Length: 163
Image (cartoon, rainbow, N blue to C red; front, top):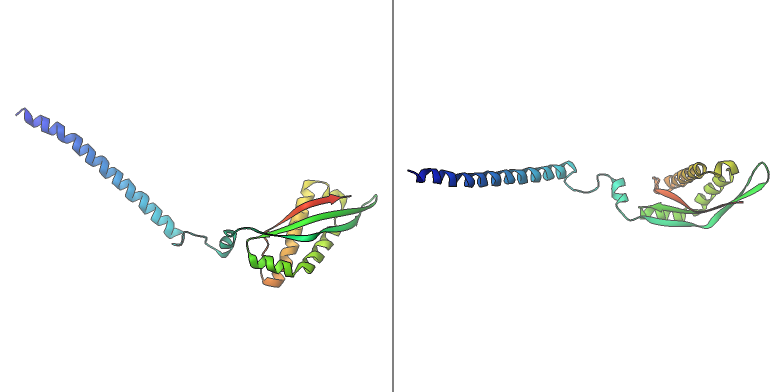
């Protein structure tokens, strides 16, 4: 009868091994179920949810507006000049093509915008950022008339010289 307790003692580790294997299996099932639920919540595609997200997943395309813009504007003390190099960025090749075709209209809108500036507002970073946002809005306005959507995602000043 002394052999019976040994069998029970040897059987306990086997039960613990089976219990830990069952626990690991349950965790695997839970993780797989969570991943499946996440994919279903994303629409089953695992990709972008909207056309804007799909466009942003494409590589960025840049268009340099050449030549640089040169305008004069009146300052209280003297006649001032502003030279601005401008690049636009989009993830939409159609928008870049439309911007190339609308170059005269975009240049006109930006020349009017740049010449309406004053030295004081452009002397600090906030003024330049405000001008950059206004330039983006002008370009998007022109493109919205052409292709029905803003198309351009960003405007970058590649040079900015005031005299």
